Length: 164
Image 1: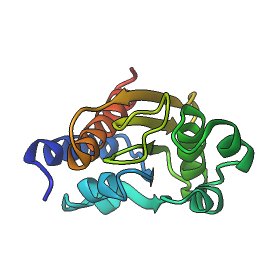
Image 2: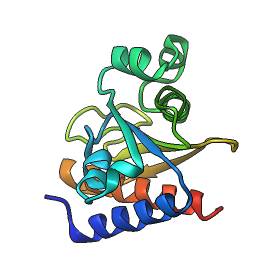
Image 3: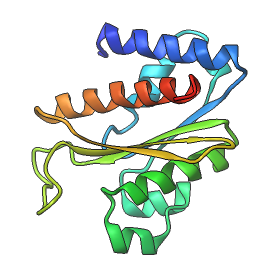
């Protein structure tokens, strides 16, 4: 069950996008589809949400949204570069005006030197504009990191639509 505040964010984002005739896709790793779930929990979301890619494995990132093997080799799956390629690939492959991506370490394991549990990169690709990627380190357990990622992704998209 998603928090009501997250559903409110999703509702607001969908209304913003619908008013502008925009469409959306997601490419998710560490959230496993929770961003798409938050959006599609709202009745009428099908006028905006076109696709959701869950690209948990590196192979899926490459095949489904076009992340380059050399990017994964050079930077690792949890990186700004991979988040950018995920967002760009989802936008192009789904044929939408905006795409969100996320890749991170939700925990409790998986941390490496320089990449702690809670590290998440969120990408936002908008047609006709440079792709933005935000780096976050969210506190808490796996559920908290994933929930914070969803909220931050929805916030990034809303700011992007508003012109920020």
